[in-house]
Image 1 (cartoon, rainbow, N blue to C red):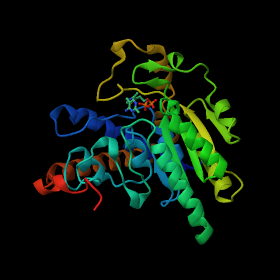
Image 2 (image 1 turned 180 degrees about the vertical axis):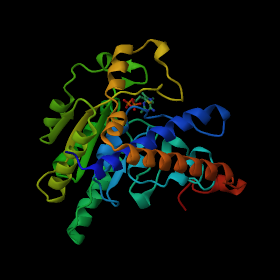
Image 3 (image 1 turned 120 degrees about the vertical axis):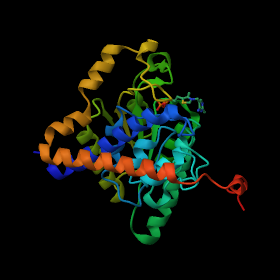
Image 4 (image 1 turned 180 degrees about the horizontal axis):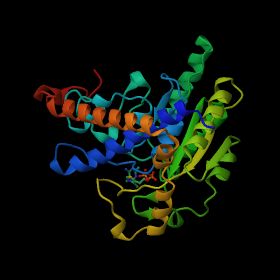
Length: 321
Ligand SMILES: Cc1ncc(C[n+]2csc(CCOP(=O)(O)OP(=O)(O)O)c2C)c(N)n1
């Protein structure tokens, strides 16, 4: 039987991501949130399965769809919500918004709106960590997540090649929701065989087809152990998933007719949050739900009450001083 403490912890983080993003979707139309939002509703098991076994000083990098990994890696929630509100207490001073969440203290590398661009930066970070480990004897690990669209960028292949060549301590994760905005995989890839393509770089690959949060977590635990003990260079993990809401914004866009409703139904039936809820004792589950609701109310209040940046702030953090 799966350890109930682990189930409770995974449930709490996944529920927090889901409920916070649904709350963001609810308040989005009020204009309190000052930046576009790319929500991960339906995709939470990847962020949580990947981040749960990481150490605080391991590093995670992600794309503009970064709320889930930011939360799962332990990013400061008050700083996140204030950032979405454009407030000075935001994790990027209120000047970057939802697509650029960052919390270096908790190992969240700054995200970027430009597809693929964080992958080489994360690879560079892994090079620095490889050198650091020679001095400290302790190997930190970088995790670079991207979407299936991100794997189409040249810098993705350049990064994988360099990481494989130098045996860098990095795990590449593809969150494969089969869509780049509205364009399905079938119209973009000559073949589906992403892991096979990656294995030609001589690296270990894993494919998880059903978004099972325990499988993702176990794969990560093994990958991290191998990398930390120096028995493996980079590892590539492809995780199938499904985006429930529109590409950008708070709405359900299934009426747009660019994807199949039956597939949506299958993924809803496979919802990992409902699965975890069913595994928990009612009392424990309700306690967690209460705590999540309270946390969201607190961070929302903090974001509302925080001040906007002062006018002079317009000129700070623009150029390196
Ligand atoms: C270099 C670059 N090209 C195009 C875009 C426009 N764009 C924004 S999101 C996106 C789709 C990316 O899809 P994917 O990487 O699969 O991530 P998902 O949105 O599904 O999480 C595109 C093409 C961009 N931001 N940057």
